[in-house]
Image 1 (spheres, rainbow, N blue to C red):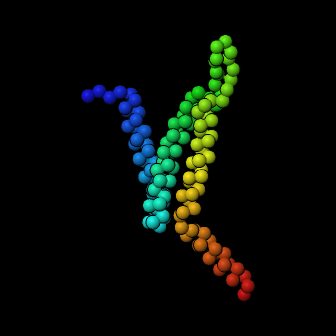
Image 2 (cartoon, helix red, strand yellow):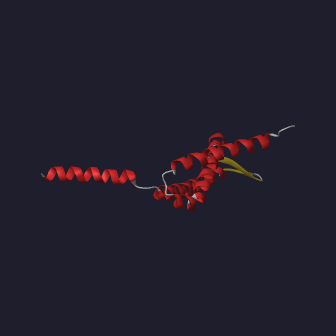
Image 3 (tube, helix red, strand yellow):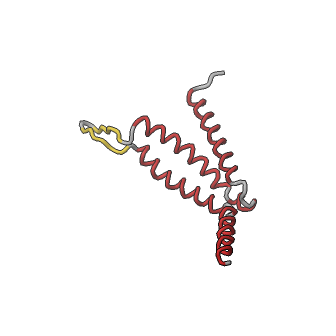
Length: 125
């Protein structure tokens, strides 16, 4: 049985996707079960975008942000297409992460407010 390079790359990308998906799920484990079911699509998208962003970042690091473009006799510098995709995808990834974080319970926030109120009440005495 022979594996092609493309097949091995696909297997590795699938592994990275599954690892990232598990990582995002762990971060969302405190989420209410009904919200977690509703956010399952966001978890999938966040994991996918994280893997793609990593690949794009490696491509940009290898080729640079600016590349030489040739069209007939003309040669000029232009923005690397991967950089353009990276910029738009990182914005969408940030939005998805923000939505997931907003769905998490505010246990830390409530604890901080309780500490603040306790401090204020002590100062009044």
